[in-house]
Amino acid sequence: MFVPLHDDNPLKKIQAQFVTIALIVANVVIFAGVQSGIFANGEETALSFGVIPAVLFDFEELAPEFAVIPEGLTLLTYNFVHGSWLHLIGNMLFLWVFGDNVEDATGHFRFLLFYLGCGIFAGLAHSATLPASDLPLVGASGAVAGVIGAYLMLHPKVRLWVLIMWRIPIRVPALWALGFWAAMQLFNALGSAGDNVAWWAHVGGLAAGAGLIVFLRRPGVPLFDRPLAADRTE
Image (cartoon, rainbow, N blue to C red; front, side):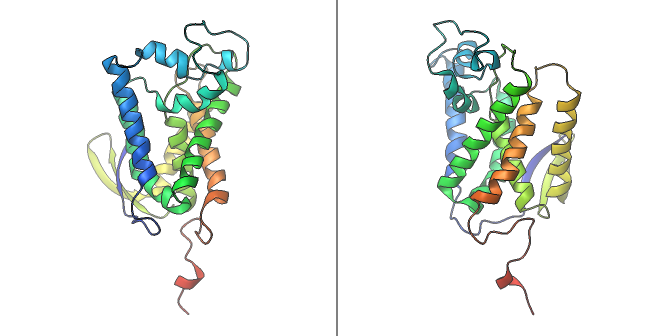
């Protein structure tokens, strides 16, 4: 696949991506707290705060020591629990590169609603496709996929610097890089018989992001890098 490094896409409406930064800090602090033992260990945290489809749909009951919040709330909390540093860094890197421009398009508060909404939809998509699974779903991948879906709707023509095979930097349009990433998520979701990787959470997040951005963007923010009427020259 590829690693995103930078996009040639300056902010237009906001001074800084405060919500994007806050989300990254929250994810890092929570992960560090779990790893250091300040919070519960990783397995206990995943069981208590991850989405377990079989429990969400009342096919199974969670052991009382792990049932610390209503199961419906795990559709929010799972977004802030990660299984490894690599899992965390990958999600936060994508959020850092692409989240600022989506936040710019929506405004701070609506971006928070957008991000959490994508995460909820991703969790439901995963659970609906694997309703009997007793494995906890954790990580921000679904919400971040929503950010990618929105970015594709807003800025498909923007040029990105990405690393191919972890070592080759190239500059390509967002449509090529992110479109390929999105296609791979759907391909893997359709071809996967297991539930070790939550491909349908990625697909669900992508779909939610692409749809929500149409309604949550600021008035006058165009889709698909179309110029505003005021920017066109006669």
